[in-house]
Amino acid sequence: MTHVLVARLDSDGDVLLSGPAVRAVAAGADRVTYLSGSRGQAAAALLPGIDDHITFEAPWVVTDPQPVDNEALLALVGRVSALGVDRAVILTSFHQSPLPLALLLRMAWVSEVAAISVDYPGSLLDLRHLVDDDIHEVERSLSLVRALGYELPPGDDGRLRVMRSRSTAPPAPLPDEPFVVVHPGASVPARAWSPARNTQLVDALVESGWHVVVTGSPSERALATRVAGRPRPGVTNLAGRTDLAGLADVLAAAACVVVGNTGPAHLAAAVATPVVSLFAPTVPAVRWRPWQVPHRLLGHQDIGCAGCRARMCPLGTQPCLDVTVDDALDAVVDLAGRPRRSSRPRNVEAVS
Image 1 (spheres, rainbow, N blue to C red):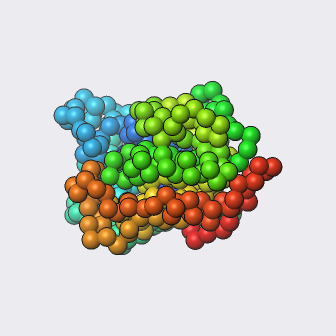
Image 2 (cartoon, rainbow, N blue to C red):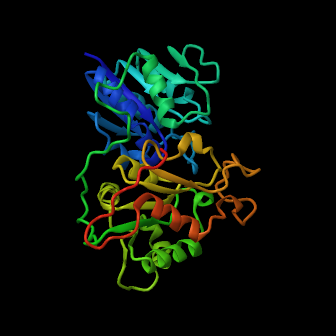
């Protein structure tokens, strides 16, 4: 009986992108435990193929790390050891090191540890896998588990997936008519379109006949209220009224979603909803663009400061996201057509 631990220690969006790799492992293992950070635990709870889920706040991954807590490190070692894990797969992005976690897993007597690592791992890794940095995060993870012998099962197309109807919050009130979701927030400020442009887009969508649903986390309520504007017919503000599973249900019912490079973009892809991606190239789109779903990529991907990885735009003006409202509106029409009051618009296939 093979018990595999799959680890991805950052945010919900990154955890969602690990889903195909998890399913590949689950197809060839007897048991799968997922290790996430607290920022990814809501997404991990939605991934198919996971039998158990544990969380650990890695001080070498989080952007606001607390002092290293020896007791927390040893607690993780003890918990993994008690689980009887045979093999561990550490999933990372190109800028992250798997080696601190690999050391802890060795201390937990995990006999086989695999990861992508540009740094010399010594005896910390049994499989040190190397890949081209300029591949999508989904392909990166699949490449690693494939090197261990895990393949997606027959009939699995490798798209993102989540388990539906797992929300613990009351169902969100959705309009009866076709609607577009506008999600103005982002986990990293440099990746968010300006509130003013989002507000103008909501107005333009309503004027063109769409109902608009504005979404956001509890911490984004003020932003969403500003973007939604005054209470009026044609606009529903759901910010702070759903958990991640409930947001998945909202996105699944939408004709398309307008969103930056942040977790809800990947959640939309996981429920097969087209994405107008306001993609600030602080990181390359080839690695994080919406995966295998119709989408339109907006933003100046070839700007000179692309790849800056900034959390706040050092220029202050965010020129890479100088996208007009007309451009965003055209992208909505391209993906979802024109609103039809009698039924949900038919999605128009686009480059994925």
